[in-house]
Image: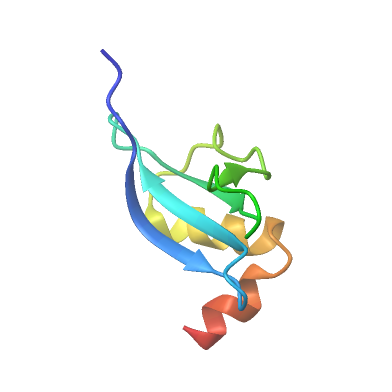
Length: 80
């Protein structure tokens, strides 16, 4: 049975319509994904970056890659 990923860090953009989750997999590798939600859509968050299959050996490495790939993320990290 596949284990669920555990979110290590979740970073939202300014209006909280997008977020990036840094997560730990059951095999102790780390990944990240970008999500979006629309206020008028009650289904919640859905993946838009399709980065979830990338594999990193640390939270720091995943965050650095996410900052490089997700355009708004560097500003959000500076503000947090």
